[in-house]
Length: 357
Image (cartoon, rainbow, N blue to C red; front, side, top):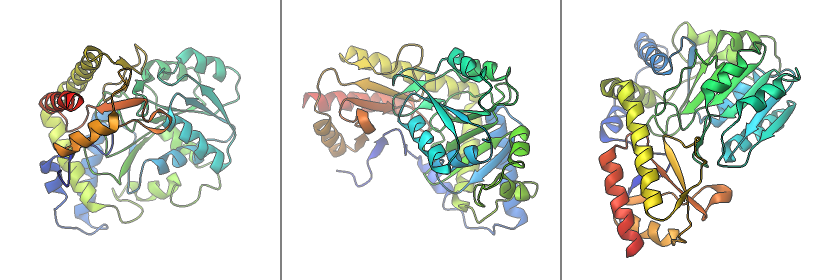
């Protein structure tokens, strides 16, 4: 068994040697012109990838903290949480702990979010924010944020908060066209970087709203980040190896080409879906809402997932066995970041051998 099996789990995902090598770059001071130049370059790259001019915050903690930043800095009245999986459900817990008022628009897991339902809720005038997960990693269900963004355009006083943890850098996102006020992601999924770092793109409207809200703490107060933004620095010492990793991964992404990258993820998703159906299984996410970065598969054939995982480990791979309430009933196959079709083909061939062993 390999000490470090190749990861076929939906986070952390496989990190290439090329990216790992970038983490070996010698440290630089966090208040130097060199780091300002590095951060400026990263910000421009992320803005290009996200089709936005919004401010980019580089944050040395998990994206879970950005859930709290999004809520603390925007909600004065009430937030509408759209829940269709484990992670959107966890975001509700954050609002509960922070003490803001909220309502939940709930869907059966595996479904996407219906823009019409959001519109009906917003017509009440009760909300100043909508929070949702673009791509539910727990279920492999992806909602159409373009259509949801069109709805939000009719409610300019409502802030659009999006978790894009498992979609950003794997699926095209038009932040400015969708009028997204706060979009967040962590690095260990489609970005293909090691875990422990996250990013947010924040609109001017969101920043102005934050100025009118108190009790935001220090670490998660937008004003703390804005103080250093013009200097292209972070409020505290960042994970400098992650910054060098970001520079490298952006170089890799743009060398591949954005259209090619989105196409690769879509083709891998269709390949996995076809494989699952040919193997006698069914897909957990409903048709029309299936993710381009992770596929959730119902274990209709009653495969012994633990045994398959053990066999895969002996061959140098680690599989996913489901998440939370779905563990044991559904397993997931990621196809994002540094995974290419040749990697996926190899994995699924070996997976098939492990079923029959």
